[in-house]
Image (tube, rainbow, N blue to C red; front, top):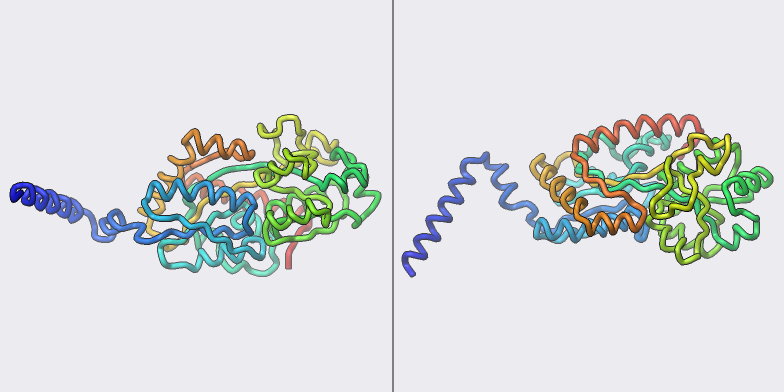
Length: 337
């Protein structure tokens, strides 16, 4: 009994000595973080793709770190409100499921200065997934207007300026801008109705209160399969494996839409104040989860392609996407006051 107790004390002292070889902040970070539940802020309403991906990742991160990862929805202003909350957080236990909208589109789209700096206020952790958008219509409205193809939509929209309306998950989101790019390239005019997330927009679309939407594929896919939504094309450069028979807008839209491409991506970001050691651990564990067959298959079934790239690679992607979408915003003339 005494020998066992002495042995345990020696092992404890050895462990403390090992920690003592590290700088104190690093030792404490490795030993203690996370010290409480970690919040994953989703800057959109529940049931949209951003929310679905965050809820897929949360249990995997909880298993890896031994603390709950709790998804909290903070919708509003095209994702800007939730992103700003994370940028201002200083508790060391709050991260963001950001999007192409919050970190590559909004700063060009919004006329007013954003309540956060997408680069200076954040440290990228990893890209979680990339997904195409899909052009979906309410089936009854599609039948009413005779819209079965992209060419049909162009014809009806040109003949009835302002009669068709399109929903989005909010001003400045990739869903909104995919529609603005379509309007710009085809010379059509459709009214835009922004919602506080993809979920509420889809509910109104299925209820027939709006006509169409350029939604993220994962959130629309179950409703497409059930027949509650009519899909006519995807917005990516190539067809989606989840809907291989569905053409891209570029291939179905004729000369007017040659080169059209408007995909979405979603990734984890930390406030700039989070220590590098914690960001690195989050990246490693998130990438490990995303490389497991179960998660890859789960995301693929929803039309998403799992990623898990490094923090530096994600930062480079954000930089290139910011330049790309700034040009699209300027060309399309889209803007939000």
